[in-house]
Image 1: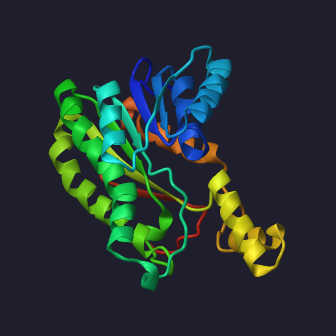
Image 2: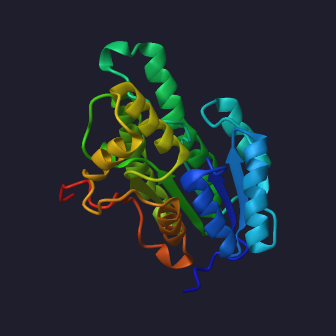
Length: 260
């Protein structure tokens, strides 16, 4: 299916690995002009080389820490008028009990999970509206649908972002600009592997046992490949998807058992 993304400029955040990289690679497959954004230049260059070998053209790279205002401003200055934005905090989720959170910790997580996306959306959405095309996808997490112990700081910031987006979509939708969020569950990424390894070491059990335990929470009984989420993100950005907006789309193999 032709997605109408050829020569569209796509800024993909946290794209040196994981879901962001998978999405960037698929955008390149579709002929989009991809800009990889992440913190580390060396990892960005490695990701760009893989995409170049696959697609025959090398994507642009931009190193920036999107959890900081300066990092976000540098992205907008370097790429002022993209057609597509894939926003992602790109930082590992670490369990923190409520008693451990102080004002600075709450502020840190709002920078990472709220401002990292909303500031870029605010910067890019007006231009998209003027040009009559825009696709914005935010990568969130399935647990915003079912709060869990230890992720209150992330949960609060992600829900704040979901609320802000729900309001903003009504302003930009008449101009063929869509904003949707993808809510993954377990995805085979370096961050997940590190988290499961840490849990295994602290519990004194094998990695395989921990992996089996988390898989059992998912109806599909497996961990997703990043490419599965990357394909979904690119599909949401297709030219034909102008009527789908303001949605929080869970893709977690059936781990979330609610109806809405």
